[in-house]
Image 1 (cartoon, rainbow over the protein chains, first blue to last red):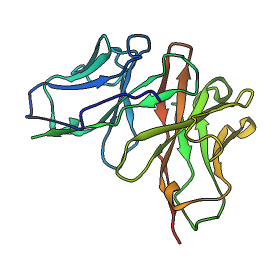
Image 2 (tube, chains in turn yellow, purple):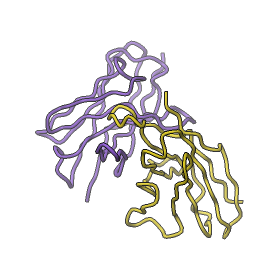
Image 3 (tube, rainbow over the protein chains, first blue to last red):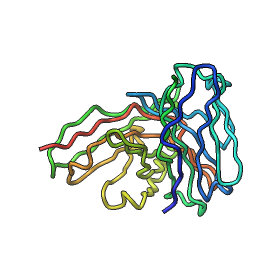
Image 4 (cartoon, rainbow over the protein chains, first blue to last red):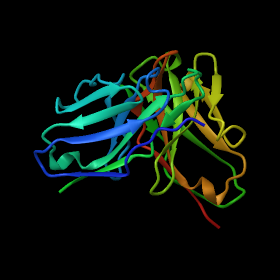
Length: 110
Length: 121
């Protein structure tokens, strides 16, 4: 089955830039999406279609894509950005039954 | 304002049945797919399946096919996730989501608050 691979954890100091990667063979053919989940809360969409930012999401959140890897970048990290981040995409066959999540990355703000 | 409001937490015994709900408001309920996402304790997100309330077209992840049933009642803008015989391994938080779906885009723009299901003898 199709898999998306994320690092389990990333740590940065406040004000630095955090980069979270997500790798998958179908990413050149399918868009990637990113969700932020804080403890005890439902996930929130922070990036869609590789690099688009929903309204209300701070500009410090950005996304990029290169080959089989997509990257979520958080510039000028703030303490409130500490959370789990999940990438999501779909199998390259494009059927509705093939939505896939990465395993998640815990962002720690030191 | 788009909202997905889920039913409250449940505590059940193994073998019991359960149906949890998700009521949509603030948008045309019959025009968007509604999905369900599982999150087991301390674990990641897993997509379970979706339903199009307009015509009840339903799709399941292979991992959940035959394990759960997804349904919807468009007259009351509510989607459901049900089990006929719960197992301890069904203990998890379940989120309903509005799924934006085309051939090239599939993602979740709105999430419910989650329903915690605990299955224990």
